[in-house]
Length: 252
Ligand SMILES: Nc1ncnc2c1ncn2[C@@H]1O[C@H](COP(=O)(O)OP(=O)(O)O)[C@@H](O)[C@H]1O
Ligand SMILES: [Mg+2]
Image 1 (cartoon, rainbow, N blue to C red):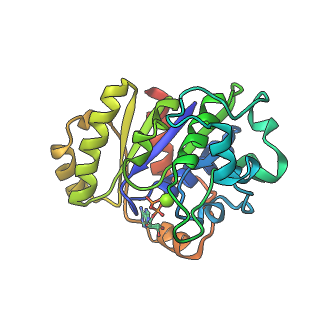
Image 2 (cartoon, protein in one colour):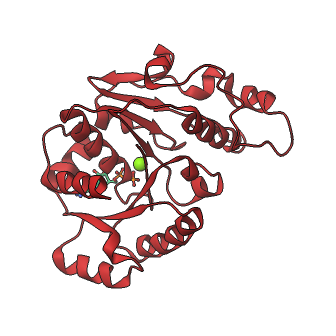
């Protein structure tokens, strides 16, 4: 299964990605997190891994990717970059960091002002996900940058299922509407997880979402999550709302 996590900046995507990763690992899955966020660099802390070398460097940086896909309008939907059988086990060692059965691959980060657009990262993300073959027990979770750029790049089309994180803000609910209509174009399964909600706030969000039946879990404001997020430390023990979320994904 390839699960893509999307939503507004700060809604809790990376937090939920890491909570899911640790829970799947606890239940004997082999988990690969694909970090497609070009801006934020702290995901490895929540996962408890070292920082992997960006996959972009494997291909010689942005320039290297451009040279491998030279046409002006490259066909990103067709793999042109990976010429070896790609699976979790065949990713070159320097480019994958592990903590037990949780692994992290990072596509690439923006590091210099004026370095140019992030399109090569988008192409790489899409082709990586397209080429990646999975074993029965593998779970891939794709953590995205804020907003909808990844939809424009077609990264979501390579996933099996979309999980939208909705926090209690007008912007987040609005973005959930936009993303929902894009997913409907792709005709793929999608689910919502409400984050930082009380029962009262949750019912307000429910009444404003087009498909409230697709809400599969609710996560309250949690001081432990907040502290772990601040300190950059992983939460590895079972956390009931995440168990509900996984159950919802399984039943879907
Ligand atoms: N349920 C929650 N309770 C308390 N803090 C939370 C919760 N979910 C997320 N946070 C905190 O909110 C901040 C943003 O979360 P993050 O996962 O980085 O968002 P995103 O990846 O969507 O930008 C982090 O500091 C995180 O610890
Ligand atoms: Mg994030």
